Image (cartoon, rainbow over all chains, first blue to last red; front, side):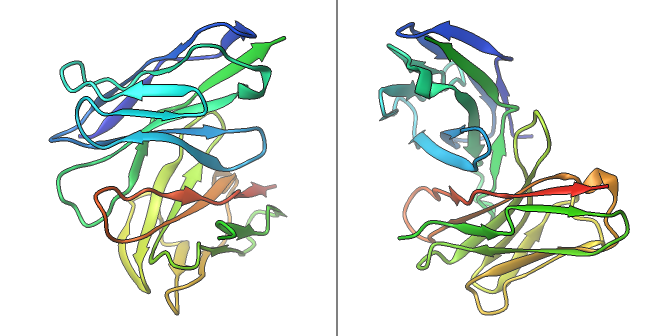
Length: 115
Length: 115
């Protein structure tokens, strides 16, 4: 079936450090891939997305590249800030033509950035 | 565009009581989703509407759960005879049919605590 696996957290970094959060997926065909961010006490916000192999999604300094050969969509940022502290979710929408475009999420990775 | 709104934001109830949550999607969005998120986990799909039609329900949605979208605009999710295991964050998302990617936008969620 379709699934998403994320690296476990928490990830603790100092301000201005480089961030990588690993995400791999299992799916048939070519799913669409997403990163969502959840700040404390809030709902999910779309961070970036990619819809086909080799696409790079980017937003607010975050990037992720859709790698079909490794079934991965790792999230990166060159220099994190304290305000980036949140839970990050990798997710996919299956590509098998089903009627429902439900999101399938990973378990989330907590990022804590220290000043 | 005021975003997806959900009410109430928090609900505390006693076991056995009925509760109802409301979701108002982004105005031009015809697709509406409900997800449930428990502590430390990613959201899990519950049900999906396209306009007023409920097209898919997850096995997670027991007979005690019912969702409606009577006029294809707002939606309600009712839980009857609540149990402690129902304690979770209930998230609503909406999207627009059409285009290659079904990008879902989430509301702030309703946090349910069953005592």
